[in-house]
Length: 630
Image (cartoon, rainbow, N blue to C red; front, side, top):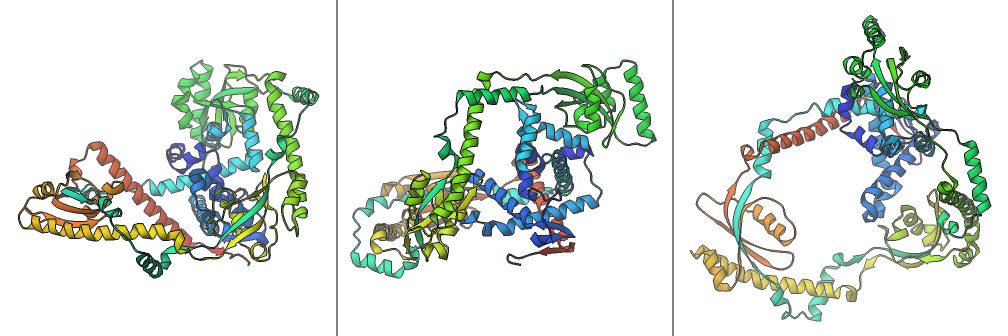
């Protein structure tokens, strides 16, 4: 079981470990698995009697939004991050997660407490300099609203669900016939020659009249639509705005440091190893007795761990399970560990995971840092704490100051912050503050846009508040001709050049069809003939565009060549001669390439099978989803 769990950490569980536990929150919300959700009045879905609350959904939406922003930065269109856009897919993921977790539980899948604890210890988010840090662990759970027990339960359930998912997706396979079919298309090669008739030399001499521009503009106004736009002025509050003006006295720093030293308790970290015997039957007890006897004889602990331990992960390392500061492992384990001297081994210790023999490898003591070492951190903490208080006070005043305000300049002056203004932006958002979904929603709301009111205080995050007013509004409509005249002019010139070049390309094609070599025709025309052999699909820019057109051509008959011409987006015209087409051959790929392809196809098949299983389970589940406003 433990090895199966470990193998499954190659998938999503590995992301949990690598990325702290943000993924869990995205999938399941903060309290989804801990039972801390709201009541039925706050319910957004019910899966076989298991409630999903609006709190679960809102937290999952926020974490999904944060994950998208972290991955794609400012390039994400703001409308993709709104609650309305995210609600459906996030709620569906919560439902799917619940269905899969319930299926895993119904099949009796479990995860040992030792395995869960070991994963917690190894999480980078809980480590300092590569070692588990108890304070980081406590602080992290406190920020996210977890108790240690609740987090262990959540992680265990996620790992069990991933074990179930892995049992489906990891069992998929691909046949050689499927691989050969994929390779025949994806690895197809084409040999061709081509020459390019450039539009650039013609563009300067092509004249476009105002009548032609007007006619094109009139006939293609659907291409020149401008969305509704607004510009806003806004007052923005963050703690950082107040922190810059806060001074911290030496006396306050000393007093805070003295309090830290007074409250400091040596943070003793113990480095442990164990031998785990799972089960409580006669066979397990016999194994426990054997280990106890051999330990009493003085046999090496690490050798016995490799031979007897059921913790497959730690036994390969002589039973080493890393450091603990007192509450990483189950309480009986921790209690026994604290009674040991370095190098000493405990007797049999019973926990929910089984029976342990525990060895204390080393003890690390933490000494209080000096005042100079702590001075900068204490100053920053005191300054930030005061800034937080001033920020909270300013936010509470902001709504009152801006209510019915004709302008935001007065409230901004009272709070000693600037009034800022945005460029025009549409409902798809814009740069900076205009990329925030709440800002976009407020700016285009009837109360703000039509009635001219200031918005309510918008809490963009825990420490970021904004109030805004619309100062400019442009209704949707057609862009004026002057705004798009240059664009139309260039388009008409390219079209004109393309028509001229298409005629020349047709002449060249006719010469080749009459028996002249394409190379000779190119030389006579002063053109460069490009040769491309063993070419595969794809590419970028003009070259990629040529390749895409060539792969759309019919394969030539044996001993023949196919001719064609096409226009590129630049207005250039290409004449191409396709000489040969060869299907991809799996046997020509290296052993490593074949293995990688088979793994990729199996992974795709596994994903497909997992989706099918999920769909099947969902179809049999009793699922009720509430619509907004219910």
